[in-house]
Image (cartoon, rainbow, N blue to C red; front, side, top):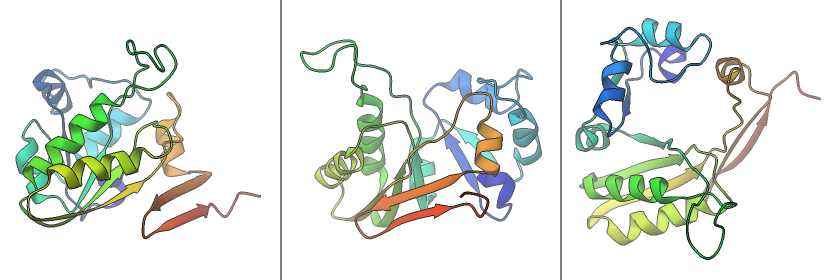
Length: 178
């Protein structure tokens, strides 16, 4: 949706699974996920300002904003939370990958997954513990309010947008909301 609504911004989606990237790039005429109208958005923007890659280093190095959008399945092991709490291993893995490839400068990292409170603090902790000397990070939280089957509609006409971080806290309600 960012690529569609902001055609002057280059959006690169990165995944470590090469088969998924091939699907996103249109090699097999189907996307790796089904969402009504998503195929139209991808077709309109692909190779214009929407790109798909497995090259994490290149994407992180060139990005100004980095969204962490990964699955958060329920924990299957461990003493606490097994079967109930979200497993944040993919969030933590993404944070380590980001820190590994940022050489210098400031990056804004936005966690955009269904995660518990204080996950942004955990991401910041990982980034700051593993960063290179000249790298700085600001971590923002943008909670997900999407439902399968209505994600495109929810993104184009949200009933609320929340963004929070150490230096910014914003709650923006749409004009139509009571």
